[in-house]
Length: 180
View (cartoon, one colour):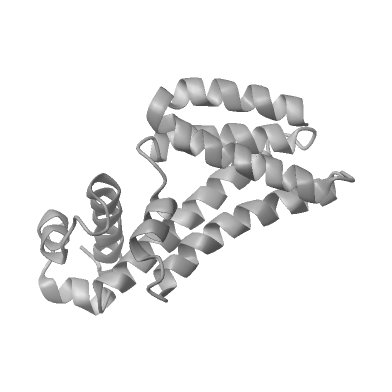
């Protein structure tokens, strides 16, 4: 395995374990064992667990935005609905057991660290994303619309764990159509 594929493997294993068991519930030994790498390999890429968590969150965020952008490119007439549908698909495929960014905020709150900043930044970026969409579409109530859409997606994320991704998607898209 090349250096970069070992790093990618470490990130994939760490993300899966962090998502399944929480950031506090997983130790570096478990990640090393499941990734089947030497301890030094982990430390060559990530000098601490916090740096590994940061890298996992950054990678997950990049994947999320790529996912949304790919959906939005399909149709320029209804980008808000497409963003909602993309988010709901993401929930079904990648986040059906809760929001990893919210978990990071909860686990690392008040610790004055980059982890909390990355997680909070993801939430702020979602709001900004909808504000930019509203501007591009010439919506007069852009800020209000961005807040409503962000709240809607945050609610969908929470409800997915209770009613499942299919039902959450159905309700979320219906509400989005009423808002738009």
